[in-house]
Length: 458
Image (cartoon, rainbow, N blue to C red; front, side):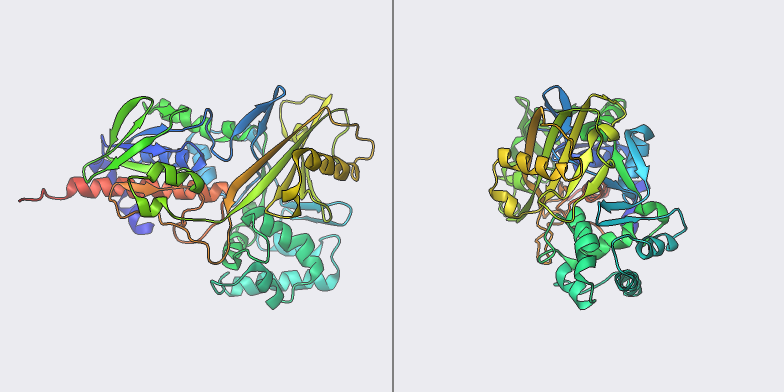
């Protein structure tokens, strides 16, 4: 990446006037589009859906703006935060709070406003619900991981890593399991220990601000994809929604396809759709890539709407027992308050016994578990269950992750499942935008090299 970055100024001049298409208007695709323009080329975005955001997008229901999944961000999301600054995302769009993990009444951890690494040491040593031996074990585990440069055997699972370092059942239940499920969306028994350590390194072992939680106060489409589209439009670049790309044809000079009932041709194309959608886009253009098979993990979000002035104990809290792992008070997190309407999002990440439940049963379970924390809660006015069966790839040690570059010089891949540059990252918004930026840089560099290459003679 450093060598590639060093060539960007030359590439910017060489590819001026080049046209690049981005297929997919999710976080990865919009990040790629912004980076293409930053590097001096023109870009056009094609999104098949009616709104931008991909698997992190706005949905409407019963007069309320929801999301197809509840997301939180980390202060370690440096590339996403950089892009926020580029496209002028206002700071009021999210709330930054120190790392807080609460599972009332059993467990709570909060990182104090101290310099790193003292903030995490104190957070672990003062965590409520852990014994002193557990606290010492957690601090020693982080110290050992730092000494090992947060590296482990590639085939190791999180469960085995924790077992090898004698992390107790209590520590695993309250700390390591919630962190693993939240970041990797994969059960401990099969989750990649190396990817888990990469997340720990960036979020918990970096600067104090990196451990902060960033809680969106607007819907996920409004958080980044729409500001990015406005930024692109101000620079003469178009974003087309409701535009499915078909009949992708590739040759050495250009890539052509059909969208919006017309034919398009570009110098390069970045395919930034979900892995379960990629085969439909690439079929006929690159059969090996189109036929790549991945395993997936779901995320279920259960929305419950109540007419009440009651509030949840805190804007975000988890459960040590039960089906729902996290509850979010959407009213408390929004800057558009309605004191008479309580909107709650319950999240169940990864696969499990809940997979067999109907939407009605899931809503009933969520209401019953919520009443353990708020006994006087009335019956909900309505519920909405959103199941993303392909929410993330299964982040296992043997997960097959494609590279950004392909064997075709003008076709590049982005998306949260693509192998990240420098280090593996899970299927998070940060992983998505990192891969989008990397695809943009490689596409621009490729066009630059082709423009600088001498013509071939017969």
